[in-house]
Length: 224
Image 1 (cartoon, rainbow, N blue to C red):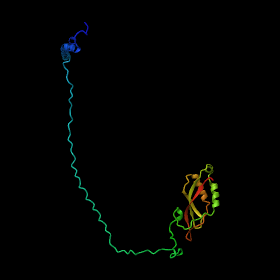
Image 2: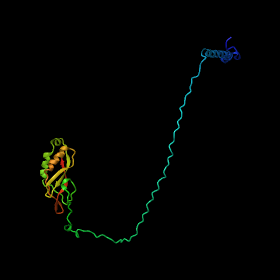
Image 3: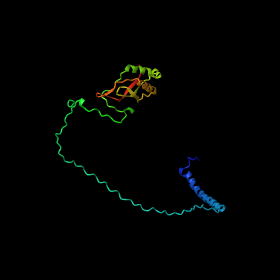
Image 4: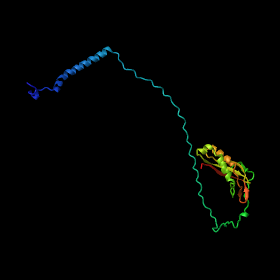
């Protein structure tokens, strides 16, 4: 008879087989566990737990600092009193008389003050004048610039402008000169100082009086 021919009610399932063998498995496991524990206590009867005890350090008492007394806040600064405009009788018709050159001609004005005890030629400084000194030998200065132009810079097409301070006395003679603003090339600065020695000027005037002055002139080197 095949399995298909057996009625479903008579077929044995895996669950049924497990239920039938459960009792033998359970008691077999209990017997095995009992024997294992008995053998363990028989061969190692002196098993003890490890000592985890520890000693605590004695807590030392700390003396607290004395209580700090906080000083009271400073007194508030008193606010300044509110200013009050004083009452005064001001005449609104007050006017200033106009000043004209007709009533005050230039010839009648006092001469400019002269600074006593100061050496004007010691360093460049502001000097008042009404007529600036003029260059009298421009062609000679141009030839000196062509002569002093450094050949290496001229051939390379490198130029620049050097501003030179001149101290010119009452006769228009250059008494001192120095660099005011560099060109950035020392060779051009040295050439400008060599050219500065060639300059000749007319004297500066402060109204109708010849005065010594410091002036600054540019000396430009360029390839044409």
